Amino acid sequence: MKILLVQQKMIGDVLVSSLLCEHIKEHLPQAEVHYVIEEHTTAVVEQNPYIDKIVLFRKSYKNCKREFYAFLKNIKGENYDVTIDVYGKIESNLISYFSNAPIKIAYPKWRSKFIYSHLIPIKTRQPDNTFTTIDDRLALLSPIISENLDASKRPKIYLNEKEIIEAQEFLRLHKIDINKSLIMLGVLGSGESKTYPLNYMAQLIDLIADQTDATLLFNYIPSQANEAKMVYDLCKESTKNRIALDTFAPNLRKFIALLNCCDFYIGNEGGSTNMAKALGVPTFSIFAPWIDKIGWSTFADEKNLSIHVADYFSEELNEMPKKKLKKESRVLYKLLKPENFQDKLINFLSNKYK
Image (cartoon, rainbow, N blue to C red; front, side, top):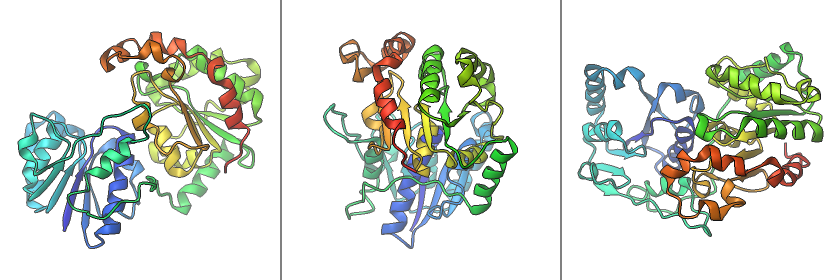
C-alpha cells in the first residue's frame, strides 16, 4: 500500500500530523508513506523513521501555475492507493484529486467533498472534554486501520548525536554553561494577534529571573528582532544580565537542537511549543484569545501547562465568534495580567522535570 499524507502550512500542524505516519507504520508495516509539506517545515520531520519520502510543496507552486501543474502530474504518476488530506484547502484538494487514489480521506467541506471517498467529521469541542486536534487527525485513519489507535502517542522530533553535540558546542561558544539551567522564552508569537503584550511578557521574564538561576534565551525569527529587543529593554537590569540575546540559532533545525538543551519552554503558544513537547521539554504556554485551547492543549499534564484568557475571564469571551476574538485579541490579551497566573508559573518553575 502506498499512502500520501498532505499537511501544508504551519510548522506545528506538520509536526502533529507526522504522528499519523507512525500509526500507519505500526498497523500497516508494509505501507510506503509519503508526506507532502512545505519547505520551511522540513526541519521538524527530518530523520523521522516513519516517513519514507518527504514531498516538498515549494513556494513557487503558489505563484506559477505551470510549476504547480508539473507537480500535480508527478503526484499522479506515483499511483497512490490512499491519500489523506489533513490540510483541506484548494491546493491539497487538487493534490488529492490528481493522486487518483481509490481511497481519498478528508474532513468534510462542501466545495470539495466530491473529491473524496471518505469524509471524517471534526468533533465538536465541549468545555468539559479533552478531545484534541490529535484525536481529529487520528480519526482520518479509520478507513484504513480498523484497530484502536494508541492516543497516548506523541509526535517526536529526531535529532542525531552530531546535532546534539553541535548545539552544546554552540552554547559553549556563546559562553553559556550547559550544566546550569537553561530556559527558552517564546517572547513573540507568529503574528500580533498571537503575541502576549510585550510589557506583560517582560514582567513574566523578570519573574522567571527572580525565581530561577537559569540563563534565558529568546526565541524569535529574524524579522522580529526589533520587537525582541523591545521586550529585552522592558526587563529589569538584573534580568538583562541573565538574557543571552545574541545566542540565536541560524536555522530551524539548529534551533530545535538548541531547544533540546533547555530545561523549559515558556512563552507564546505556537509551533515552538509543539517542538518542545516533541523533544520532551516541559512547556508553559500562553494561548492567543482566538485559539482553541481545548483542541491544541495537547498532552496537558504537570509537564505541559497552558493558560488562556478564557480560564480567567470566560464571561467576556462567551459566545464571541472566532473572527471577533481574533480582531479583539489585543484588548482581550490585556485582561490576562501576569498576576492572574504567576502562582501557577512559580509552581511550574519549582519542579525540575528533566
